[in-house]
Every structure is written in structure tokens, then in C-alpha cells.
Image (cartoon, rainbow, N blue to C red):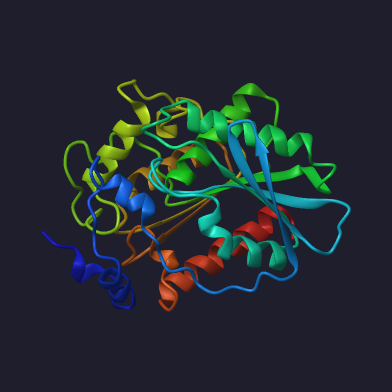
Length: 302
């Protein structure tokens, strides 16, 4: 049963431009080497410093205009835990840092399957520790640091929020999650009706989770949906597409956050599949980007 008839017509060009490539052991090297077209952007007004910290590389974006106490976004990139990089979203980070007057620190965590859980989330935690330790040098207000991520990066952001709460060392101001990857069991019983046909499938999901877990049982710091207690987490923004494989798990996580007393905003976009917000000309993608930025403004106190 195809869900193509449910896709927003303005997103069909994106589907046709990015033909599906199944994710498995054979295609993973090809996907890692694949070059996606990057939208043009204005790099002015924002500096970039790359910092090696142990096993991770941090990309630090700062508005050129000095500020005594900036807010800061700690960003975790997507890629199914097995691909992606911080550099691949520079085209979004520079304009965002300039527009919001905030710092952005993006972490290159080590990827699965070479580095299984808990290495990726511990890498993210190490980067967060570096950010708090260097907040003064960066003119960052450590009371206004929040975490942001999309897809697997959204899953790691949610896991990091749990880890930060439980360790009690680095309080986060918010969690901003775009179609986060939260549940290792999604897709195990086969595809969901009208979800997960495009861009990220149930088969892709099974491969990615198996790569991350490496035969281990998932805990809450790998699959945040498994957390029994969501109380005390920072305010959350969650966005997903109605045709995204992750739609059900994202909606359920938002419901559980609300039930736990966590201030939560949930956005579900009709006709939208995984990664839809990268479509440059679709109205639904523009709406999602607008809503995401407005949520950041509120969370950052801009």
C-alpha cells in the first residue's frame, strides 16, 4: 500500500530528486561518501572555531558581535547513528547563530557500528561538559544552554537530556527535537500503515538500531522512549511529519512528557515524510522551519 497519494504535492519533487538507497552493510560506505547539494548561505557575521576535545570534534559558531551573556544551542546532527557530520549543517548553523544572536556548538560524535552504545551519547555528554567548562570564554550564559537535534540527533538530544538530568552536573534549558529517533522497536514488526515509506524506512531503522546497539539490550540512554520517568526534564519542542516512520513514537513521547509535567510543544505536519523540512520551496517545509525557529526564540529568551 503506497502513501504517495498522501504526500504534500509540493514535496514530490524532493522525493524524485533523492531516489531511495536502502541502508545496509553494503550501502553504508556509499551513503557516507554521498554528496548532497548544500543550499547557498551567507557566512558573514559568524565565526567558526573547530575544537578537538578527546575523541570528538566540536564546531563552535559565534556571532561576530560580542555579547556578555549569549544563549547557546548545543546541536547533535542526524544520520541514523551511522552517517552524518556537524559540518553538513553549517548552512543552517551560521544563519541561525546570526539571526538569533546565540552561540551554536555542534558535536561530531563517533558513529556506529564502529562505535556502539553508549559511545555516541557519552561523546555528546563530553562535548556538553566542554561547553559548560568554556562558557565564560565563549560569553555564554550557562543557564541558557539547550540541546537540539534532528532524527538520530534528536534521539541523542533526548537521551542527553535524560543523562544530564540523572547525573545532575549540567542543567539544560530546553530540548528541541525534530523527528527524533526514540524507539528501537519501531519497524520491528514491519512497516506502519502510511508511515515510513519514504526517506527513512522500517528496514533502514532496523539496520541503524542494530548498528547502534551491537547486540545489547536498549536502555533509556539509547532509546529514550524506554525511560520510565520523564519528570524533571527541560521544556521540549517536538516536530514530526504525519508520514514519518517516527510519527507515532514522537507523538507518544510528547504525550508522556506532558503527563510528566514537562512543558511541551508538539507539531505534526500533514503530508510530510522524514527530512521534509529540507525542501527549499514547499510551504509545509517553510512552515516547519518557521515554527522551529520561533520555538528556539522562546526557549533562548530572544
